Image (cartoon, rainbow, N blue to C red; front, side, top):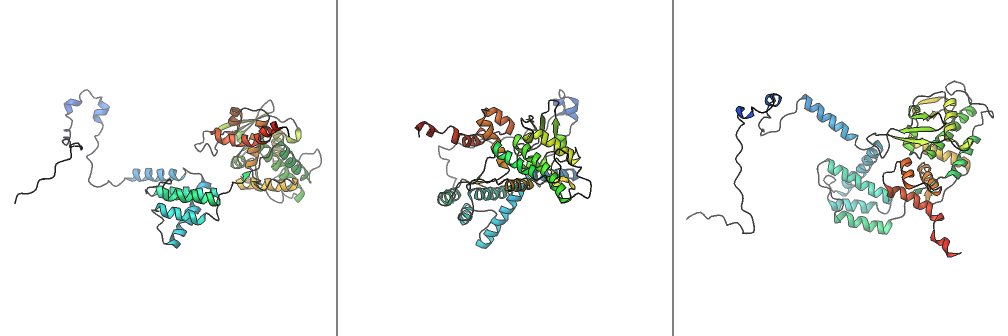
Length: 392
């Protein structure tokens, strides 16, 4: 019985073209016009059936690439993603569902389980951490999948609440905080500079006076330069330039919006009042600390001894809360007291004083106008509300 022939291709499908014939090896004579350097370069070997084993040079390069890949995210982001992934992995083990690769329905179920107890920002960060782990292991990841997106929208509709933003700390609040720092300088006689910090045997009152000078300079610089708390904690004396006209230039060598370290300069003019001038506050702190190299803001122990390492960024939050409590400064219940309030307060006050958008963004280093306008909208709520036109 003759063998059946394959069915003909449908007329709508193109017929396959003939297979290309591999070119022959180049003739040495044909390379006569090629420069000698290229003629003498070795030709790549023919592809092997199996992947070649990397040499020591290749292994070192691969290890270096892996090490640099770990630095693609900020350390705080890596720690947060690690904690989020551990939580998701533990939940999947308890639910008897695979975590890697994770099906969209599994991710949607996990987010739904967190909805009653976690804030909007926490849920979105968990979703980002899960996506990072899926992609790192070569699995498909589609956060817009209906099995993820629909439950997420439903839970935010049911349990979503406005985020507690950092309260904007304007000039009035900064003056109260500075006054609280000045009140803490109990061990320093009026008009007499503080003694050097590294001499042993200082009293607790003298240590408190030294800490007050540090906190005063920290708060005024953070407000006038609109710095993030990590930038404020990481500034060094080498990055501060005191100019001949009495102003200050600050180099931000690395920031949240500048992970590649291009750097940015910020100008801080001399203040109109001695008690709130950030330049004078830094000069007083430098004299009292007795150092002009390394981190500007450091830990001070109970005997007034100055540490060598920079403050942790969270220490900025603790200092702010301590001085706010001493000043009796509180914020609305729908807001929170945070070092980010120094940055938000700068934008609010600068806009209210008539600064243009490009001036504010150049100082705060905002790259997204929409983000910066969020602070401006808060400043407009009371000054440009159309309710003023009602004649009430």
